[in-house]
Length: 71
Image 1: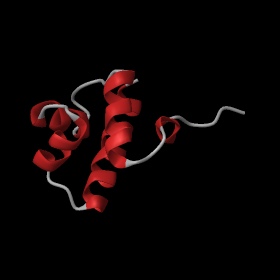
Image 2: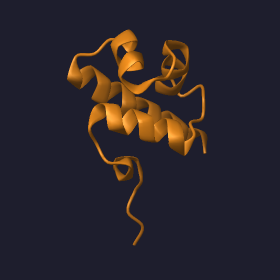
Image 3: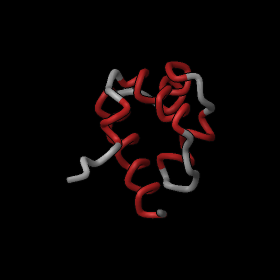
Image 4: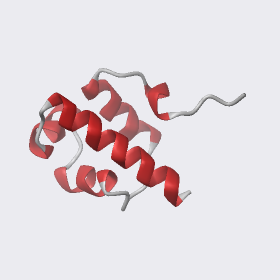
């Protein structure tokens, strides 16, 4: 489970940086605290579906972006 949390965090950070946003800007866009987002990006905090959904909306990507396809 730890690997999945870290993977999500890395993807969130990469997507945020591709937009050129600071954590402060990202926080304002998704309504989550800077501290929480920092912990998520570093894989130190798990994330609820509702928080991940807020992140996805801010980034303009579907929630399914973070879920692997199961065959």
